[in-house]
Length: 315
Figure 1: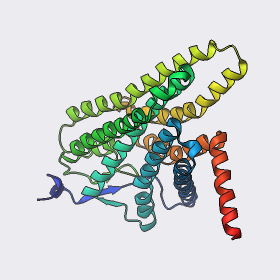
Figure 2 (figure 1 turned 180 degrees about the horizontal axis):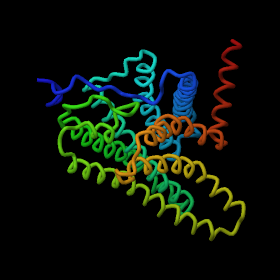
Figure 3 (figure 1 turned 180 degrees about the vertical axis):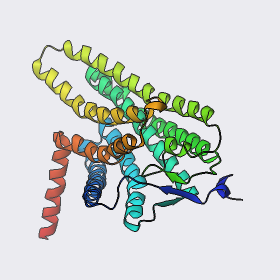
Figure 4 (figure 1 turned 135 degrees about the vertical axis):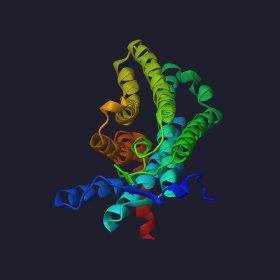
C-alpha cells in the first residue's frame, strides 16, 4: 500500500515547464537562475543579519526574518526541480514528489500572505499607539502571530495536498506548468472536481482576503493617524516605515489574486505560468532588497558585519 491511496493509478506527471530549448529561452532560464541565486543569498543574508545584530531584535525584524525564511523555502521548493528538469530534459515528477511540492507551496504562500497581513497590524500599533507598542507587541504576541501564520498556512497546505492527491488521475499525465500547482493538476483528474474547486476557492478567499482586509483596515487607521500629526518630519518618518511593507504587499497580493481569484473561464496556462514566475522567484528576490536597501538599520548592520570581516581578515 503506497503513501497515497491512488498512487498506483499513475506513475507520476510530466511538467511541461515554461522554457523550450530555443536560444531565447536559454537566456530567460539563465536570468531565472540568476534571480534564484540572488533570492537565495539575499534571504540567507537578511536572516543572519537580523539574528546576529542586537539592534534588529525588534518585532518588525523578527517578522521580516520569518518572511525571509518563507521566501527561502518557497524558491527552494520550486526552482531546483524546475532547473533539473530543464537541464536533463526529463521533465518528470513522481506522484509523491508532486504531492510534496503542492503541500510546501500552498503552506508557504498561505503563511506568507497571513504574515504580511499581520505585519500591517504591527505597523499600525507602532505608528498609532507608540507608547503601548512594547506591551501590545511583546515577545509572546510576536511568537503567537508568527506561529498562527505558519499553522494556518500548513493546515491549508495539508487540505489542498490531500484533496488533490486523493483524486483519480487516469488520463493525461502532462501538467501544463513548471511545478505541481493544484489548478493545473485538477484539469487531469478523471472525476468530478466541482466540490473540490469550491473548497479550493473558499481556502483562497480565506487565506487571501482575510489578511488583505487586515492590511486595508490597518493602513486606513495609519492614514488617519498620519493626517493628525502636526510635524511634517513625523509624517514623513511614519510613511517611510510603511513603504517597504506596502511594496511587498502589492507584489505578493497582486500576483496571488490574479492567479487564484479569477473565474476559471478567464484562466490561461501561459498567463498563469508567467505570473507564477513573478511570485515564486521574483518576489522572494525583491523582498530582501526592498527591506534592506531602503532601510538604514539593516544597511548599518550589514556595514557592521563587513567591518568585522575586514578586521578578522587582518589577523
